[in-house]
Every structure is written in C-alpha cells, then in structure tokens.
Length: 375
Image (cartoon, rainbow, N blue to C red):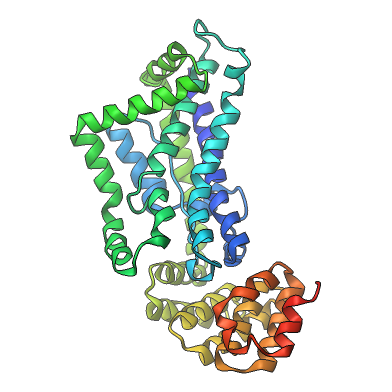
C-alpha cells in the first residue's frame, strides 16, 4: 500500500516541476531571460520551493482531510516581457503543462489497459493522480489572485483594478480555502466537475473511486506524510546550506524584497551580500535590476558593469546594461552592450526590436543595423 502513496507523491513532484518549468521557459522566450540566472530552467524541485505553497498549503490540505502535496513558485520579471500576450502566456503555461501531464497519464486508460474491474493499487493510484492533475488545472484556472487564471487576464485589466486585485492576492489562497471548507456546495461542484472530466478521459469511475478510497487508508496517508517529510528535510538542508553562507541568505532576502517590489530594501540587502562577497554576480545583477526599477540608471549601470566583469557571459546583464545606456541616450555604449548580449544570446535581437527602452535610439543607423543583421 505504501507504494501507492510514494507513486502519487513522485508523480505529483514531477508535474510540479513541469508546471513551474512551463512558466519559466515561456517567460524566457517572452523576454525575461533572468529566469535562467535564477535556476528556473531546470526540473529541480528545490528551485521552485515557496514557503506558502511548498509548506503551508500542504499542511492545510492535510488538515482538511486531503493529502500533503507541495506546490511551487517562480518569480517572473513581468516588466521584461515583450507584451501582454506573452504575460498571459506565461501564466497559462503552468496549467497547460498539468493538462499535458494529465493526457499522458490517461493514455493507458484510452488504450484499454485497465478496466473498471481493475483493483491493483497501480491503476487506482494512477486514476487518483489523474484526478489530482485535473483538479490542479481547474483550480489554477480560477480567475482569483494569485492563481494562474488571474495571471492570464491580469495584463488586460486597468492598472487600478490590477493594484486592487494584487492587494487581495495575499489572501486569495485563504479565500479559496474558506470557500472549499465553509461552502460545501462549492466543494461538491468542483469535485464533481473534476470527476466528469476524468470520466471523459476514459478513466473508469470505479477505478477512480477505488483510488479515492485507497488514499483514505491510514497506511497510504502515512507513506505520503513520510514522503512529504522527506521533502521538507531536503528543503531544510537546502536552507541550511544557505545559512552557512551569510551572503546567500542576504541575497535571497534581497531577491524576495525585489520580487515584492521593495526595491530600496532589496538594494540594501544586496549591498550587504556584496560586502561579504565582492564577486557575487547574482547580487550585482539583481541590484542593477532594482536600481533600474527605481530609474536610477547611472547606479544600475555601475552594478551591471560589475556583473559583466565578474561573469562576461551573462547575457541578461549585458542586455539590461544596454537598456540603461539607451535610456540615458548613450548610443555607443548601448550598441556595444547590446551587441555583446546578442552575441551571447541571439534571441535577444528580436526582443530589442520592440523593447521601449530603446525608443530613444531606435532611429539610429547603428541600432537599426544591429537588430536587422543576421546573428
């Protein structure tokens, strides 16, 4: 029986990584190349951990009588995305990844490899995992912040409405929890809707029901809890490694502050990290990003220059450096930096074609020649 819990946990972890990777790869293609520097273009679940989604929410669902399955998060610099379509696509990519995983998992049922009489734990567990994947897709597509459904429509809303919803986003998860916990009709509707989709995917209802009963058994829940505790241990070990390096702790504090748009505080944290480790590329780079957001371009240029000195192959730093020079009207330095960025990452040429940061130098022959010539 414990194999059933382990199977579902590992399957969920894989889909979690694919979900977050989906966000990251679309953001990368859409212009936010910083996701590469943040380590999001991997399938390492530790890179996607989030205190609320990876720790708090699993405990809540466990208390609700469900199972403890972690969630994740990636932090996207939406200001670097090319347009609103890409912004929406980034949010849609996560649920789309879950949907694709669901379709792949359902193939054995489409092929008739399992029948309604199948009682082996594997088929019941597979059916239940499919149910969880469908639930993740449906839940994530609700237009409630901070879910992906809201992220899809957010770029198209007026800024005032976005601001109000963003403030509500801090409590969105609790709102959903309250809705499912205190409004039984809402929970029943959601579960029944998910069941119907599973049946459409040829998952036998009896097998799915057997899976739900299987995961009510103490030994299966115990195996899930053990697996989850193992995941917590990995997170703690990961965090302990950070604590052994105070500059990493300060960097992650700064990164979180930057993600929450507390740029002044983020800059201060990066300063402390750099004081401990002067050749800390990521700290210099993200300090430049925070300074850029505050429109302190001269200081941002200093940070980016230090970053590319430490790591000459950092295409994102070269590109952002070019943006700052362009915003200052320094054509020669902007072209030089952009040329280096494109040399390292040719896809940045198409991004530069529409990036408003280059509007001031867009008609310059050197700029035109750079963005139209072949890499």
